[in-house]
Length: 166
Image (tube, rainbow, N blue to C red; front, side, top):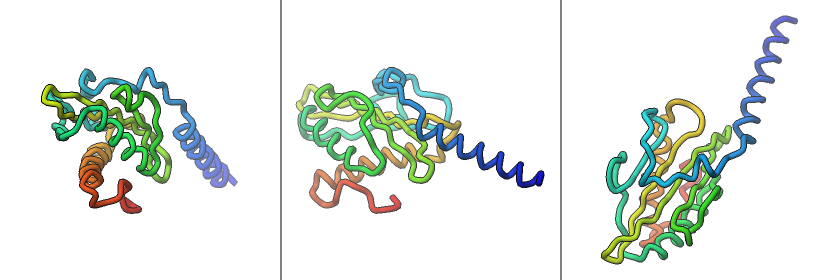
């Protein structure tokens, strides 16, 4: 009897945690933050690409900022388990909520399109976890995978979505 109660309480606790993770509101004021101005966290649960002071540099594309914003937004919204939280391609900055496959943990990915004086455009991308101290490299793999698939998408060599399981 006691074991059944403990197991029941544990199951109820896990179900409550999963429900909270899936249904907790996402406040755009907290998550829609310019990656070029953001303070890089000390926790290992984010990945930041920007011209300077991030974890790496995002590529520059031979197109206008407006075109890059439209194409990248179209590409990102074609990914599984992604929804737009704030911003737009017209604004040049968009924050997406990316959810993990099984539990639905939310990560927030803010993309800023950077117009350059030479007519080309670059990206600043900040992908970060909402819950937990570490992310096991998920945010880095997401950003690097998006950039690789986006280049293939631009080259006409691959669909915008990753293979199932990727």
